[in-house]
Length: 254
Picture 1 (cartoon, rainbow, N blue to C red):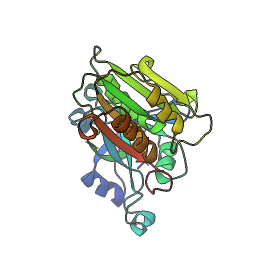
Picture 2 (picture 1 turned 120 degrees about the horizontal axis):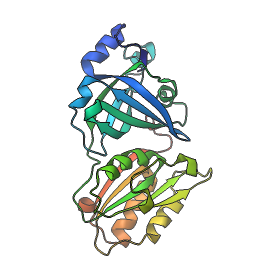
Picture 3 (picture 1 turned 90 degrees about the vertical axis):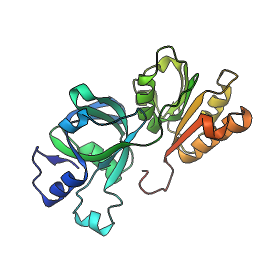
Picture 4 (picture 1 turned 120 degrees about the vertical axis):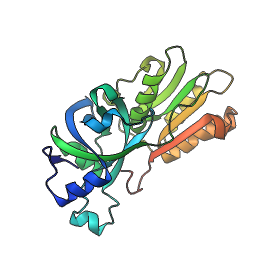
């Protein structure tokens, strides 16, 4: 929400404090070319129940602003995957991609150390499943969720991945990054990414299915899932988790 200071001082802040978890921004870092790491801290973050891969629903505008009231609050909340949760320091890190000019993008550019931020969660079922090995497929928007999952893997558990970014400078410092096949689009569109699916087709995997985590643009996710099911024979329900973060023209997924 980005209200400076540590004490709620508007009716909107007081309402948000009743409905959401309140935190304060304690660090902001440009972690990649188009990605800001935003650290949220506060006493309630020590006891949050978090599973790597889950997300927060962040309040990015005043609940009682004229725009929020006029639009039925549809632009007041945005979903962000958790990069890291540290109960010992009572903190959660988000990594937010700077793209477009929607309410979430504007919030991520403007939020600063000292601002109050309100959120719901963590929540979501896009989390690690028991498997002999794990496969990660996606683009920039998937990196944050993948980071938490990869960080929590046992060192002896094999991981494979194909991740596409626009430019090498957009890569996040992922754990097990050496096990990822990286692609760069160099300005091409990320929707319906044929190169990403082709790279997945070429990936050398064990004969038996592991568990796949596919995230990013909806149509690319569908194509990657279709390849695993139809070409590799992976059981769709038990071995593949899909999370569509965005698709062109879909409001709220900008």
